[in-house]
Length: 380
Figure (tube, rainbow, N blue to C red):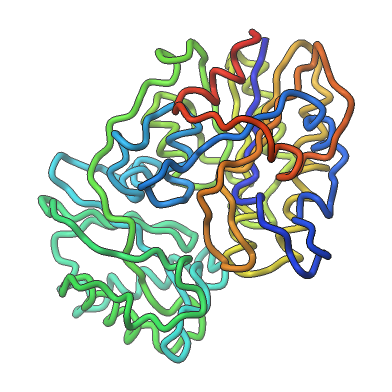
C-alpha cells in the first residue's frame, strides 16, 4: 500500500462575490478532485487556537507534530530548508523582498521577484557598507526567490514582527519593528533599493529559535518524500527525517511544473518510499496578491496536471487531498478555519462528488495533531 498527500496551499476560501457566492473550489468543480471527494471526508484543525494561522503551523500539524509545544517561529523551519546552520541560542529571521510604494505594502513577494533579479537585490544590500555594518554578525542564506533567511548568533530574545502578507495594501509605518537594529536594516534597505519600483525593501519577520520535531518514520512507520518548492515545507520535512530534494522545475508560483511534481511523487513511491507529498504553493500566492483569476488557474492545474496522473497509477494506494489552511481573497491573508479533507482509496472508490468546503462542512473536526496521518494510514 502506498500513500499520497496532495496539498493545494491556501486553496480553501470563503464565498467570493465575483463567483456568485461560490468559492473557487465550488466554481471549478474539478473532475479529478471530485473523484477524491467521493471518498472519506474529514475536517482538520491545522492551525490550533493561539498560534498564527499559516503554513508553518499547518505543516507541523499535518505531519503529526503538536505545534503548541514545538513551534518556535517560522524562520528556523525555513532555515532547515535552505541548509542554513542554526545553533542553540541563535535567532533566525525570514527576510522577504517586498514591494513598497508611497509607504504602503503593495506586494509581499516583490511582485514574484525571482532569479538573478532576486539575488541581485540581496547582493546590493549585503554589498552596501551601511547595511552590512548594521547586519554585522548575521549570516544570510540568499536564494533566487523573494524568500531569504538571516541568522543572528546568540540573539535569543523576543521580537514583535509582522508578516508582510498580513498587511497587504496597508501603510507599513505602524508595522516597522520596535527593535532598533531590525528597523534600521529595513529602512536602509529601502534607501539602497529606492531606484526600483518592485522588490525594494528587505522585510524581516518570523523570528524563532531552533525547533525539535518528531521523526516521521519512527512515529508512523512510513518512509516519506516531499515534492515542494517552498523552503519552509522542505525544512519541516528534513527536520522530521523525510527526503525533500531541491527540484529545479518547482517554482512556488503559478508557473511551477505540476506534472513534474506528480512524476517526482510517483518515482519516489516506485523507488521504495511509502508516503509522498505533492505541495503546490500557487493558490496561496495568488490569494495574497488578491488575484481570483490566478487562484482559479492554480487550482485548475492541480486538478488536471497533478492529481490526474496520480489517480491513474497502478496498485493499491490511498490519496488525501486538502489545503493546509484557508487563504481568503477578501482579506489576502490566512484564516484558521478547520480545512476540508478527502481521502481516495483505489480499492474502494466512491461515487464522485465535487471536493469543496461545503462538502465537508458537517464532518467532524480532527483535533489531535496526529489524527490526520492516522486517518490516511489507518486502512493500510
